Length: 396
Image (cartoon, rainbow, N blue to C red; front, side, top):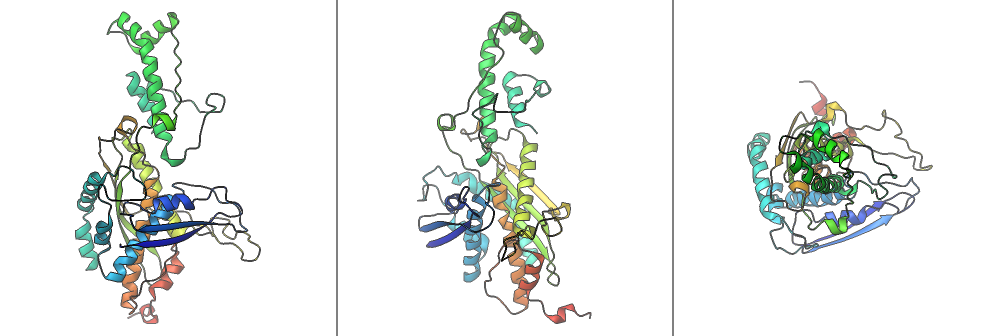
């Protein structure tokens, strides 16, 4: 891409309390060289209820826009969308909107790994023809995780509590837990030395109690002070879909995701976060449409009969996730990275795969022009865009 001028508008409902357009503008740059991008976000007030932030607010919109633009470029030039993306990827030290450290080397390794593990080239050719906080505490204290009890938070015990936005929950909580445990162990170490190596945890804390040692430690996480470096979460996805051009029904047949989780604290939790985020994105891009009466503004999709969140049958038939092991993340807690929001941003890949399937059907109908394809991509919209002929509905 030589240059991009993008104006986009964010409908925030009746007030601007939680506009996501400016975050979308920041994330629009994605992994691409943004030297010649000019992005202008706008906020629009409408006579509808106020909107609110959800997972990856604004980020998924910004990244989706840049990915759709890459597909548009590839379509107009007759090039492979994958190669167009690679040509525009930011290299280390290249100019960008934000001068943050860019992990270009690991990004390329991740993409290469995903390309092999997903059998990308082979499949493309064929188509053409649990509690992380408890684990941190257990590790720092050197005891079994079943001896850790996690209490619910409230404003009496934690008056400085903040929202869980920005995938910072694990970083903030785990960092604070680790520091509090280190402080606690510094008080227990003299007693541990006195009791000798044979003493277990119960004996250690019992003796500390008898010696009037304070067994309560508290640590406050201050993001402005305690976060020394920023880190990127890099991830890649390959999506495969199948479309019934007669009815517009579609099925996600396979998804491969490779995500850099640093040195994962809890791989099972991270894998579940990635799965959940991707499926949430499938709902956003494929099924969950909000309709209102144009005159009264009354919500028409006010039940599951009209509003369709993803179900078990909407999950990819073949769902493969790989955590890219990257132990070099010195900025994260125990070298971990946040994983909860990036996969939602990856889900636009499924929308793009669906576009390619529809493009193939349109080509069979003699239509090869780039087309407007708004999400959610409902069954009705997909069927109409395929431009199937009457002849296709006749039995041979």
